[in-house]
Image 1 (tube, one colour):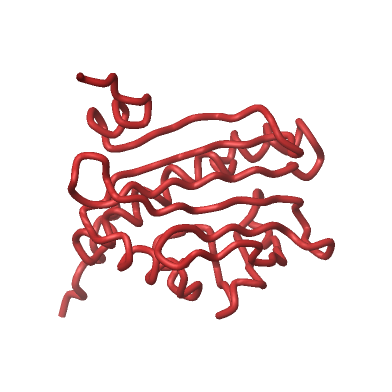
Image 2: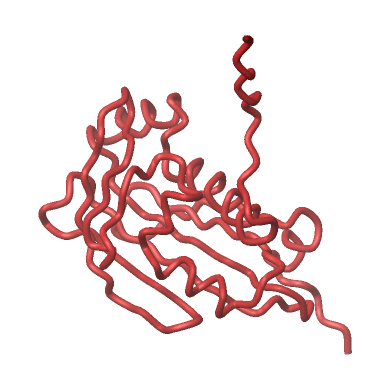
Length: 182
């Protein structure tokens, strides 16, 4: 008997990415993003779990403490935003979940899951981000216009994570600096 692929399988088979906004839960904005990466699940989990690696592929993350508790990210308008989080679930090789503490500037929660690809090759990496934007709907609009909305960032960060893990580098569209003329 042949089964129909789930929407995730179809999205993964055609483009390698999943983009899905979720409108339930405790926060005003939630989104699930996913990507297929041609690397073993254990390797991807271990790289992500070393939280100091996150700025290597998360463009707006300035720093993360080694325990994952303290984050500094670039917010709208060039202002840094400090986030304090706590790890609420950590299943080695499978899932890391976090949520903000009362001291955080932005109320948020999320998780990253690592699953063996249904097609027998590589790993499906899924990220869920849920947050209440500062200043409510206006804050969400400003973040979206400035390309700092977490849904947009998560999609880009997963793309960079895929590049880094598969090729060892993150490609950019920036031209290399010209060599000095002598």
